Image (tube, rainbow, N blue to C red; front, side, top):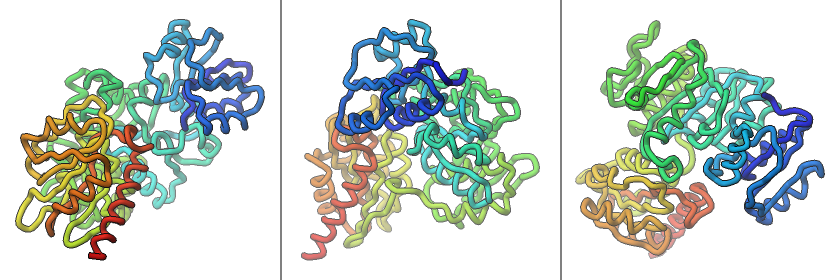
Length: 460
């Protein structure tokens, strides 16, 4: 099914992906009804610029009685929301913007998912392929919806998509010629209800693959899929920084391959500009995508050695009096926090040298899962946001836990207590929406507040 003239389509939720869906559907001649329970000034301004034939309903929360041939639901709209449930009960097919975009894409798709590392790996794969003279662009959960780049896809060798569990809930025929699952850890349990349901949502990235498609899966995640008897029809290749049973693994900082035709040494991590096992796995996944796209190993290594992480990912913001301040605002779950803690440089005299700033809007996760990393690395914590008290209860047996009114107070107190060789790390393990517009907004505020604090100290 492809939307076209006279097809009645409802787009429910007008965030970034919903708007892109409306704007593309309008070019197909479909009869579009765009609905959002909000009526913000920004949405009203956007709606005012739409063609008159688009029926835009803002501030509407009642269940719709209209007849539709298709409903396109934005990732932020839960599937048990009354309007969605009503549409489904009436037999209306429910798609997400990812499925809608894929149905009209004119090039192969590379899809990258996982609990953590999606954005970094999507950026790296795009950079690697581009430097190897492939026509590529990134889209999806990384920022640009697939529907927003559809005209460009006819000229591309591939589009590299970051895909989330929310997007994968609403696929139908979506298929990636190369699909990557980076890792699986607790996240979004407030939406999915259980870890099993979350894992099954992530695994949908593989369900429509053909036997000749590539399924690149972290070894530990592959074990989780097998435990749930999840079928992966594509060609499975595993990687791991922890387990040498994988097809690609790490041994004494050397990346080793068991892949036919590429057996043996692949990459020296010491020659790369990145630290941490999570970045080693992101590098391996990037190499494997390049291999699936028929790039030569000798061509890939020089590019992999130059890759860097993006903003808000263990980003060094400043150093003052021997204390380093790191912005890891992108860490919105416990697994990401653990990776950040273990990648922080230790002091010469002590491993426990991290003053951790954490907290925000919780997502139903078990904060005690980070107990080992907190006990090993953290000198003390300053906790902010809606989940501060819950985190304090979980971590107080393992490190001193203090509550702060806001991010500025947390930075000031952590910086005041830190000694030369210590690290002040913002790694929230929570979403940002209780206090900030996004993780980017939170990270930018951290940068600004650290800069101001450092400047005030230099004046002492």
